[in-house]
Length: 75
Image (cartoon, rainbow, N blue to C red; front, side):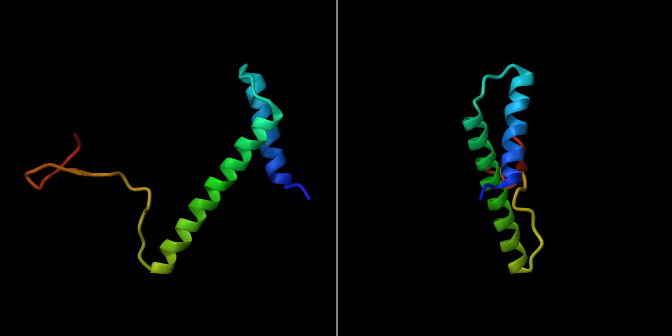
């Protein structure tokens, strides 16, 4: 049984590519839709692991570089 949400997303990707003049096949649009599903599943898994630890945190936080002086730098 096909996933109707994924089918709708792949059709949306295909039609958006056509409107923008990007040559994309329906098969490729379906692969892009499947990949985005996998990404969202991975993000949901990470978020559920955060809640299991009972520590609120943002996994996707910016990285702060520390120079030799021990002070944070943004270079």
